[in-house]
Amino acid sequence: MLIKFLGTSAGCPTLKRNVTSIALIINNPSYEIWLFDCGEATQHQILKSYIKITKIRKIFITHLHGDHILGLIGLLTTISINKSNNLLEIYGCKGIKEYIEFSLKFTNSYINYPIKIYEISEGEIFNNGILKVKCFSLNHNIKCYGYYIKELDKKGSLNVDKLKLDGILPGPVYKIIKNNNSIILNGKKVNCYKYINGIIKGKKIFIFGDTSPMKLYIKNLFKSDLLIHEATLHHKYKNIANLRGHSTNIQAAYIAKKYCVKKLIITHLSARYNYKDLRNILDNCIKIFPNTIIAHDFYSIKI
Image 1 (spheres, rainbow, N blue to C red):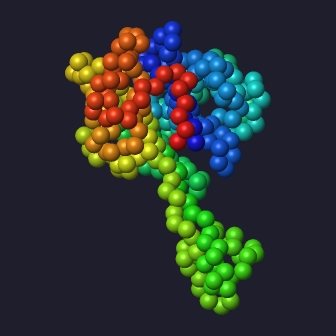
Image 2: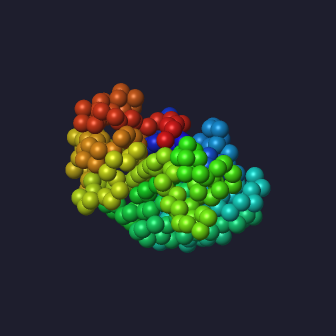
Image 3: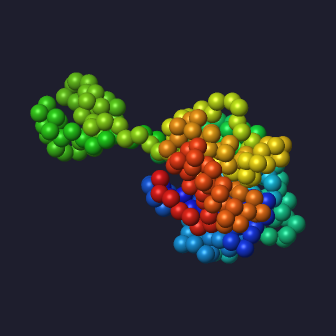
C-alpha cells in the first residue's frame, strides 16, 4: 500500500499547499485508489500526480466542512467524463447523501456510473477479507470521524519439509492446506496451522479527521504502523486550536508517543505557515516523538 498526500493545508489553499485529501493506493488484490476527504481542487492535484481518476473506488469523508468536501462534486462529474463503469462507494456522516444529491441536482450535473453512498456510524464499515475499515468519532465542532484501515493477518509460507516428513506429498492439497484452518485428509482431521511458518501481521493505519486531543482510549491505535494526525496550529495557539476542535503539533506528537505508534505524519496545517514555520513545527514534534514527518503536497510513503 502507498499513501499519497494530495492536499495538506487547513481551511484554505496556499500557493504550494492545497486543502485536505489523502490517497491510499492499494495493489492487492487489484490496483485501486481510496480517497480520504476531497477538498476543493482535489481533481487538479490528481491531474498533477500519476493517480488514475478512473481507479478511485472508495471515498471516505471525515466531516462536512468545506475544506474536506468541496472538491467532491467536481471529481464525481469528471469521473463520468472519463467514462468509468466501476462502482464508486462514498462513506461519510449523516448529511453526505443529501449534500451530493442536492449539489448534482442544482448544478444540473449527472453521473453515468454506479455509485453508493453510506451514511456511517462508529464501528466496522467495510471488510473484503483482505482489508477492513472502521470509523470512530473525534472531538470536533461538528460530527467528524477518523478511519482505521487494517490489513488482515495472513498465513506465512508452507513448511514443505514438514509436510513431506508427515507423508503429504506436493500437489493440489498444498493449496487446500494453505487456504484452510483444518481439513480431513485420509479420514483424519489435519490442523493446517501445523504446516504454516507463522503469521504475517497486517499493517495498521489511522487517518484522523479534524479533532482536538482525544481523552478516551482509542482502540487498536497502540503500536499501529502509521498515524496521520492533524496539527492545525503551533502549540503556542493551543487554546484557540482546541476551542475550534483542532490539535497542535505538540498534542499530535504526544498522542503518537502515548500509543507507541511506529510513525507519525502531521498534516492539515494552517495556511498562515510558511516553510520556516513548518520546519519549526516539525522540529518541536521530533523532540517529543522522533519518528515524525510533516506532510507536503504529493508526498508519498509506502506502508
